[in-house]
Image (cartoon, rainbow, N blue to C red; front, side):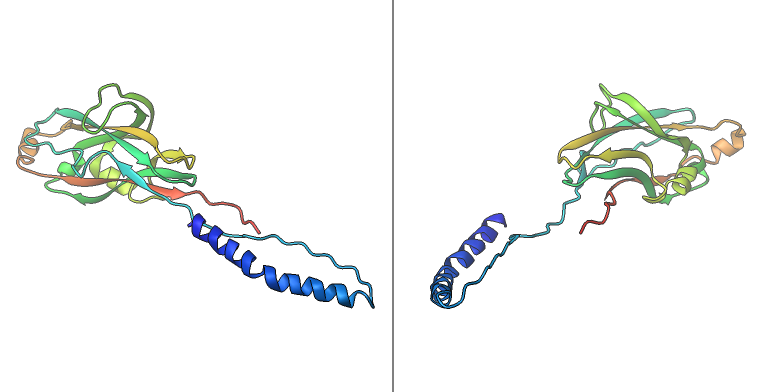
Length: 209
């Protein structure tokens, strides 16, 4: 893009050279009978280019949590690394969508999300937490509390340098505290699902002339 713009500028300068020479020659003849002062200034090449906002993760299209045949009291964790390809500063927030509930299991799967360093998709080896901006709550409560960018949690400020990364660790547990045995048994075969979303929005900037 810059190359074609420069070429266009060069063409304008080249085609403008001959008329300019003629004008100067004419002015020299005219100034023989009447003197004049002239001056000009030019600020050329003004242009605006929109920045890019890009966000990816290392899940390769796979779900972070696919756990079958869980039992009361069971727990687990998974990690994911999110990468910003943005060349403008912004903020990433995590939220949930598309809760699928059944038999109240969404009230019994507890989940929290931590930010940190290290780890990779499905492997939390070397993960070191630095913040816990989404404290533990049920999937039902999480879907209500963190449902879009405005209500999202675990904020991550990006500087606009492509390649920035942030690691996250999600931890879940099947909590049946306070439930009767019959209520626990009623959860057998239930399935619950939810989408975890990371969204990047560019920062608002002051108006410039």
